[in-house]
Length: 274
Length: 358
Image (cartoon, rainbow over all chains, first blue to last red; front, top):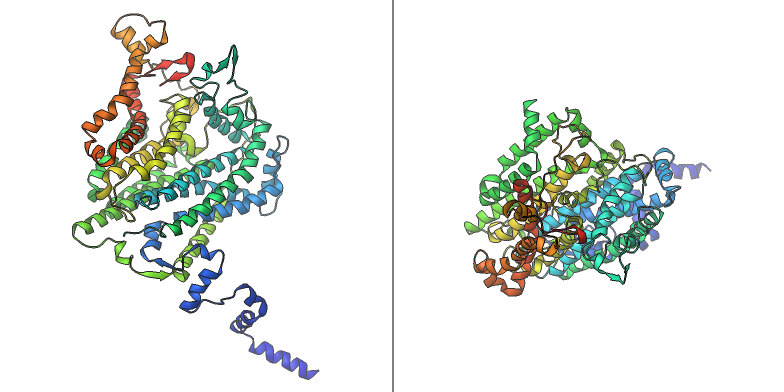
């Protein structure tokens, strides 16, 4: 018995963080997850880029000028990171939030007062504002470096659509707290759709579209009605915005992001002087 | 007191927008003088000083510290900072080109480095810093939550989300079908058209001003003046009834602004010709139609022969007409603004019967 405790003492005496690290890295579990191990040689640094589904978004080697912060401002990366943060915090918020007139507001209030670590909504909201600004700055940088020029014309276009989607995501999310700030901001914003030429009941030309005496475009059949699912910002609008905000728009945005990132690689990587 | 009155006066939209526009173009004319380290130091310390002293004022503090306005205060610094930064790089690059030296970016273009660790670590640091900022921000500032929604009590002012306030500000000058539908649509189309209109092969992949002066000036005017500045104006300087309030002014709900705006048709038929307004709206708005159609249809060929001749020659007719159409659409806003400020012009064409007002 004394023998065993001596051996145990011996083992603990020789124990150092480096030893433990080594032991973990040699274990079968670790090797099965991280095949390359610590990238301590150039060969391993290349292999690690190819072997990981996340890292393989990047090429193995990049132009030094292209990755300078003074050149990229890191704004595209920040936008993507914020999108991931918003997806994660948004998912947590969905556990607590019910998109109905009865519960929406109290659920949001409870997020602050009842839920432990109740800053998820804050991170979500401030992250969303930051993402809008980051997208603008990303576009600003891409314009100022002329990076939309051939061969990147199409990717600029994908980017413009992603910019619009970012604004729409933020706009649809703005309604969900169902407080005075929310419904009136959405009312003001969606009132514009009323004036769509030919498709809004207060838009130019809409009065011309009628069958006999029956107007085709009325306040319950126009663009605004389609957007809100009703004649005013109510139950229908809340559900519509919720579904678009949590499912519809993120799906489309994710799809376009895949194209956006893929095309960066296909079009020759981060832009730089020829 | 006097200084506050003065600042309240010079932030009036007509002065603010005009001054900012002039400042932008003068600075682009002499970029070497404006986009230097010294000017940045002066401008940004001035801004910090302005903000630091102004928060003492209760009216100013009330608007600026509204939780949803905090990101816009941040933008107030971020956008000028990156504008200065991009143009300083451009000025440096242009100097290098003039001296026959390689561009800043070119010095390192040939070097290829391994993505791990060079890029991956930068990204990691960015993520960590951003996470810390976000968590700090979220712990110090609560997300806004007002009273429960009440469809029968509309607040005054009712404002759209802050990134759409440029469009809401446009409503002062144009009807919703233009400000809320047609112009936003044209902004998207215009942005998407940029790479197909701009055939200038230079300035691809590096900062420069000299080689792309026209493109950059046009874009900056649209982005900085007609978008960002209007967002800021709409957020901080528009109060109840969308009236203008200086930064130190109390948002008085009873502030009255005289409605003195006059349509073009009244100017011509009533004031110039001394007759009454014709009954038929098409005759009544005849001069308005002439003005708008001249602007949209006669201007492009005219510009092709005069001011923009070199573009017509290099771009060809299709690209040229697309560009001038988008350009004229963009310039419609500042033109209408000036007409409003100078002549109190309400509508150029006003047919409220069909919601067709320009």
